[in-house]
Each structure stands twice: as C-alpha cells, then as structure tokens.
Amino acid sequence: MKKIAILTCLDACLVCTGASCLNAWNNKSKRFAAYAGENVSLEAFFHCNGCGNDPEMDKGMIEKLDRLQNIGVETVHIGVCAVKQETGVLCHVITQIRDMLHSRGIQTIQGTH
Ligand code: SF4
Ligand code: SF4
View 1 (cartoon, rainbow, N blue to C red):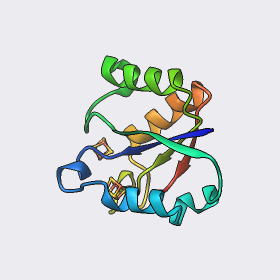
View 2: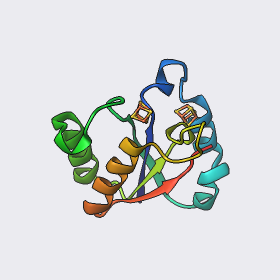
View 3: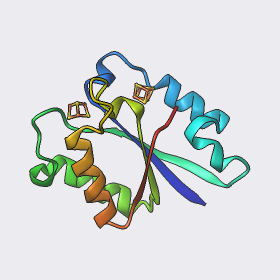
View 4: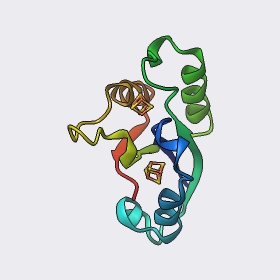
C-alpha cells in the first residue's frame, strides 16, 4: 500500500478545517486524481511549526519527519496554503521542510485541492 501525508501552513490552520484537502483526498480529485483506483492510505496530516521557525533546528519538526519515515510514508503533498499569495512562491520554511523530506527519501508533490 502506498502511504501518503499532507503538509500544510500553521497560519492557515487557524481558519481552515482541512476540509478541502480531505474532500479532494476522499474523492481522489485535484492533485490526488493520480491515485484513483490505487491502494493508498492517508497516514498523516501535519503542519509547519510557524513563521520564523528553523525546521533544521526544531526538535519537534525533526520528530514529525522521523515519524513519517518510520511509518513508511512515501509521498507528502504540500497544501496550497503553503504558497504565499502575494508572490505565488512556496514559503521558505516549507521549502526547508520539503528538502528535509527529500533527504529522508520521501518525495513531495505540490498541491492538494
Ligand atoms: S512558515 Fe510559512 S507555511 Fe508556516 S505558518 Fe508561516 S507562512 Fe505558513
Ligand atoms: S490546502 Fe487548503 S484545505 Fe488544506 S489545509 Fe491548506 S487551506 Fe486548508
């Protein structure tokens, strides 16, 4: 079974239930469309630890990424909320987390719903 996780912006979670992410997952639509008919499992839904945080030095974030690795997550989808609306560029903290995931052999895909 292919194991998937979703990474989102902590700020967005102040106002977002994650419903659009989960709706897209449940219906295998939008950025999850490629999994239609596949044996896949959503194993985790996690967030960055906030602006100004250095993920490389953050024991909590390292623990989260270790956990994903230990449970065998293959791919992390990065939520649309991790892209800065003003610039259209991926948040630099999320970029660091993405690189940390890659160094653990976990691939990332930008986009959820
Ligand atoms: S670091 Fe980036 S992704 Fe995290 S809360 Fe701040 S803006 Fe959102
Ligand atoms: S990607 Fe959309 S639904 Fe998912 S956590 Fe971010 S704002 Fe919410």
